[in-house]
Image (cartoon, rainbow, N blue to C red; front, side, top):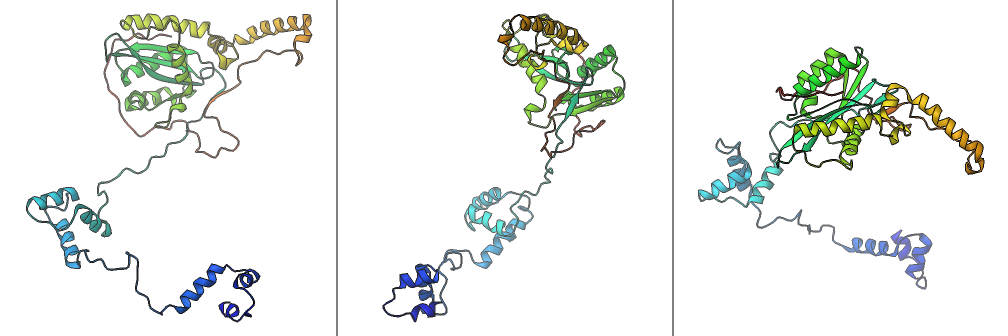
Length: 363
């Protein structure tokens, strides 16, 4: 190509010839320069040029030999460098030490590292009451600075009905075991019929607690670490309680906390028109009474429609009903995430204290 350009007529400019041939003019200049350069050219980059201040091969070998010696083989570079300097020995800067060990692939962490953890996405669906429960523990501040009470709340996933709760001074697995033993007995949960979702707090992953759940036939599901929205229904209930107009903010005593929360649970279960339940109360959905109440609501809407049909621009109104199923992390049509937890699957972590406490379990 360069030969054709050089042989062009004298009256033909280089720019027009490059345009006809479809090449860039600067490319031609680069070809010309390379053609007239000498065949061998000394390297000009710092990577290929020998550095006059670089350590010699003997000095680099001495650094590695000292790093491998008995006194320093298990010490970090920082310790080796300053210990030698304290003895009046200087073989190179601290960065030079790190660079030599890095080139020898000896600068990494030699301690055994835990492999990356992969946790399944919890996916739970409830289509009736007492199919799935979700629970959590929330801190209640007291008048004494730094002193908190522990509020345990167990929620029915389908109806949002609070099936059990208690306030305690402590947070441990023994209290959780007593709470669920009494809750399962009270509601007559058949063996293998209940799924229980929780996060990964120490009471929820304690081996004694998980053993009891296995004996009761309860399938345990756990939130992923540091994923706050894996247990949204319990978190939402705690927000509802702490945003009440009469919430004390700080409690005088554990008796005060139990009295206030007892009144709150009565309101929440029996009077609270839940937005996630189409305006029905948790108790109405939990017991199935919402069907009778829906008929009363429908008759009221029908009567109003007969009197003023022009006010209903979309036609005859229909009462909204609670969802037929409630899910945690429902599977989307394009979701290719991990499979849901299987019945009987338990986490590997063991923890939790084994202390008893004077408690008052409520239902």
